[in-house]
Length: 243
Image (cartoon, rainbow, N blue to C red; front, top):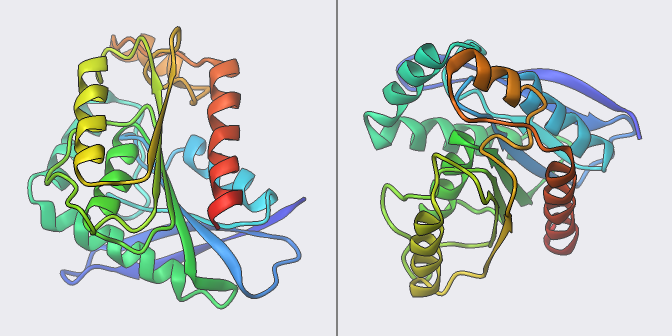
């Protein structure tokens, strides 16, 4: 199925312009289920945009969230870290930007505002998990090689949808101890969740640019085509069942 795209602008209370990348099935009808896509710390990457395009070709309305403003993007780890640290410096920043993205997507004429999920990669995985922990109305949330530690742990009765975590067994940034702590958090909050571990995959395994980005920045990242395909299918299965 082919798709169409458009940029959707929305603005924070202090005037920062955010540029969502919205992808729709070409024959878009009303009442589509929506999926928010939170990119890696690099910003509005091709990887995140291609994920939204693939979701649109599956029949969803998918929008990449602009977490930094003005559609910013880098392949320099130092710059990415500076931007990420900036938005993490105050929990209210990401809370506002992600809530705005949710309401912006929900308000699109093609959307069913009551049928929305979210996926995220790496830093974006943390972003969507924290959206779920804050009680955003997300029916399904998937984290790919995401940061699992919470700002505020999930509380019973707050998380509204199912959570899926696709984790790399050789991830140098998120350990299996982190996975165990996450599972403990989810069980305590009685959240419906699942964790899949790909034993030989490394951090960034879904991103075709991961190996190059890792080599450039001296970080142990690697693309794993087989694990990426399996993780993507697991996410599609969840969306199909829940949305």
